[in-house]
Length: 157
Image (cartoon, rainbow, N blue to C red; front, side):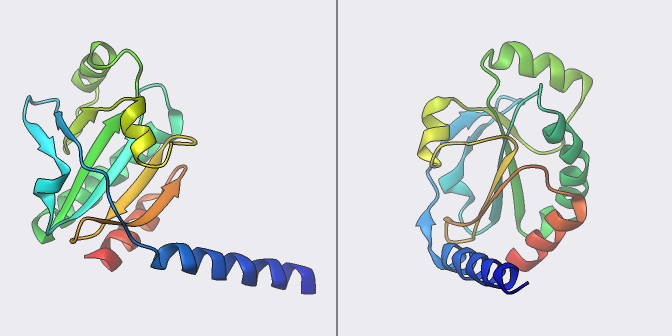
């Protein structure tokens, strides 16, 4: 029991330290599914969720409906979400998938260079919360429930 308490304390201190470290979010300038250019730097002043995902990723597809609900609720309060597809086939596979499964927030297609700029993506989905100043405030690897996502968004706005 003492060992478990010690491990939890170390994890808490480690995660708090990580949360306090701020670094600029890498900028990108990519076209969305609607042909509009999405540039992260131009979204400064908003809380931006950068979500790396793929059409073949089950957990990614499961979290999208919750993301859309939260986006609808908080878009007018300063939230922006950008979905970055890491599908290797790019728009050739993403466009048909989006035609069957419309997403209400902008989707762009990223590449290995963008993933590396964000510190390397160890698994997807990987979600970054970028604060209003353009700094990475939080990183989450793996599926995120709607309620967890909403709590993060509310605390970031």
